[in-house]
Each structure stands twice: as C-alpha cells, then as structure tokens.
Length: 320
Ligand code: G4P
Image (cartoon, rainbow, N blue to C red; front, side, top):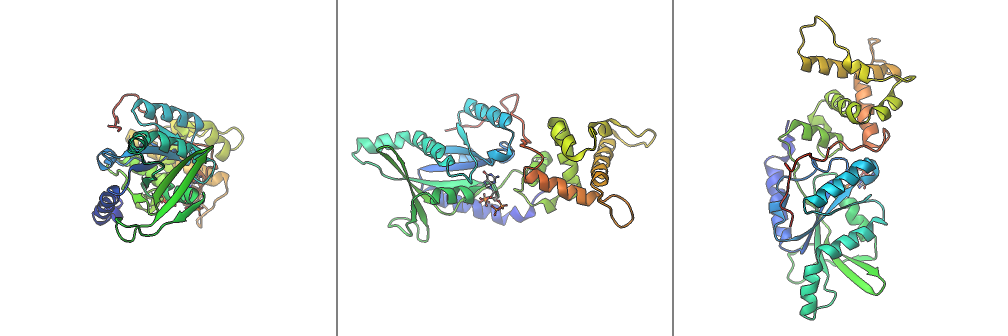
C-alpha cells in the first residue's frame, strides 16, 4: 500500500530540494494536520531539520476534536516541541505564529543584538506533507503587509522570498519566508497510518479502495465518536455498533472477515437510510462510502481527531 507516485523520484527530489533550501533559512516551520498529528509527521523530520530553530504548527484545528488537540499540545510539549494550533486560513492565527517564531528564534536574535544587528529578518521555510495547509499558511502570512523580494544577492538564483512584518507595539519582527514550501513524504509503512493519511486527503484516496477506506473510517468513528456517527447516519436512535456486534453463525469466517463483513453491512445500512439505490435494486455501498469520506473531510460529521496521544513514549523525538 504505497503511493507509488512518491517513490523513488519524488522522494529524492523532495529531499534534495529541502537540503538545498535548509541552508538558506534560520527557522523551519513544520506543519502537521491536527486531525492526525502523529500520522502526518515525517519520520525523518528530526534529522532533516537538525541545527535549525523549529516551530510545529497543528493546522486544520477547526476540523479536529478540541479535547484531542489540547491533549496533543500537552503531549508535544512533554516531548520538548511546543506546537501551536491554528486554522491556517484565519489571519488571527498569525499572532500565535509571531509569538512562536519569537520564542524559537530568541537565541538568534540575542546573538544579533550582541553584535549590534537590530531587526535582521528571520529567514524561514514551511515544511509538511501534501495537503496539510502549507500554501494556505504561506498565503495567510503573505497577506499580511508583505512583498515578494525576488532574488537576493548571495541567495540561490530563482528563490522568491516573502517579507512578513509582525508589529507588536514598538516591537517589529521581520520574517523572510521562502515562497515555495518543502514537501515532505508521509510514512507509508503502516497500513493504519496510510488509511488516516488518505482519509485526511494527504495521499491519494485511489490507492485504496474507497469502500475499504470508508469501512476503516466507520471502524474508527464507531470506536471514538459513536454519537456523532449514529446521529448523522442512523434513523431514530439507531446504533450502528449493534451491527458490529452481530456475528453471523456458521459462515466459517475468521473474526477479521466477520468484522470486515459487519463494516460493509454498516455501509449498506447507510446507503439504505439515504435511499442510495444501485441498478439491481441493491443499496449502493460505493455511493455511501463516497459520502462518508467527503463528509468527514468537510467536517460535517463533527470535529474529529483520528490519532491518539501515545500512552508510552514510543514516538519520542529529539526535539531541538
Ligand atoms: P499544501 O500546500 O500543504 O498542499 O495544502 P494547501 O495549503 O493547498 O491546503 C489544502 C487544503 O486544505 C485546501 O483546501 C485548504 O483550503 C485547506 N486548509 C488548509 N489549512 C486549513 C485549515 O486550517 N482548516 C481547514 N478547514 N482547511 C484548511 P482545498 O479544498 O484543497 O482548496 P480550497 O477549498 O481552499 O480551494
């Protein structure tokens, strides 16, 4: 289950571009999807950004479960990385970004100040896996009193920088942001991670069958958000968890097969409730699958987070 589009050419190209751009910046702004803060991390991010100041932004918080976002913010802090949670489309997120940049670059600014350099811009680049909100964030920052600077002496030809000026009282913080974000490859090795990335739109859904993907979504939602799911797709107090508990006797199927079959029955029931009929007068599971994924991505089922804060420190990172 690999998005072949990424291997090996895209990955090598992305890595090369990042290595090149990394040399030009003081600060790396890593963007994660607040609905999947662990699945949307690049496995090599620590080594790729070694030696750089770094801030971590959880974008799409407006779509994520607020309680889970809060738990993730504390968990990341316990790992030595302090992320901020934003809706990348909102200008008001910029104040939080300014504070995070200031705090991450405090040492650099202090060094500059001792050398008598005042207000030298912080050079930054945005990094993240596809569709996580990189361009949106760059555009939000660019919308704020910015100007493209074009080529600069000593800077690799062709790079465009966006100058962003944050003013707070008399204090001015200038950031020069590379206008092209660095695209990181997601982690594919774990099927569960792949499913979550596809559900959140970071890898192309077509690499997984849409019905399989919808079944995985049903399973995740009925485990963590049963009320939201039942009230959107059920009829008159219907609880889809009952379907998952039904076992069909004498089929000779394994537990896994039984579970898979039950998830498909939930999908068929949703098609029935919505009166999605296919040609042969059966219910159209495919259309129900499409609806589920679409509504999840649009936040219509509710504010949902698919990853869980790790119980142990298995994913501990070497935060810098
Ligand atoms: P990328 O550069 O990392 O690939 O991602 P990009 O900014 O293009 O964002 C991908 C999609 O996610 C866009 O939607 C964008 O509007 C949306 N998005 C980005 N940040 C947020 C956020 O914080 N909250 C929400 N709800 N959505 C966000 P799209 O449907 O592809 O395009 P469009 O509808 O904006 O035209």
